[in-house]
Length: 160
Ligand SMILES: [Zn+2]
Image 1 (cartoon, rainbow, N blue to C red):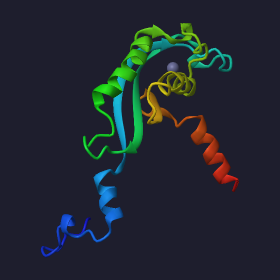
Image 2 (image 1 turned 120 degrees about the vertical axis):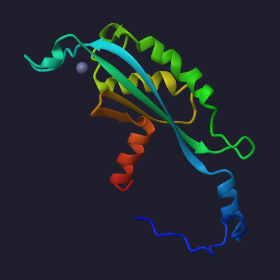
Image 3 (image 1 turned 90 degrees about the vertical axis):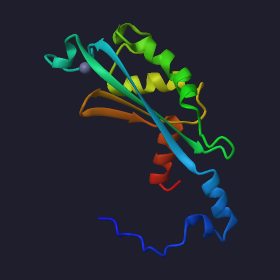
Image 4 (image 1 turned 180 degrees about the horizontal axis):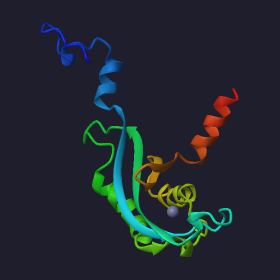
């Protein structure tokens, strides 16, 4: 349980002694996310014989796009959600009610491959792109943070 603030607590706006701290609150680094949905069919051609995912079936996919960066000091936005829609919706439309295996680059349309496919199309349109998460079912999802982030995490883990 969160502790109650004392009634005499000084309001935050009167409590800045450090200009850098003030600037950080004016343009905070934020993560902005928006969800999209699409329906699609697929089959997985590389699973072992008899695997149920080899059979043609469909999913109600959920897609979450997250961008990150500094809030613009004037507008108070990182990005207008409508601008996010303008970049993402054409990709959602290309996937919706499709047989994913028929799309170029999605011959093996696993959740992981789908994340990469979407990333390659979205990254050039969206400089602040941070992560892509695809839910194949309500309890199964994959998150991809881009090739640079994976490499950076690996190098950090190996102390380079
Ligand atoms: Zn499936």
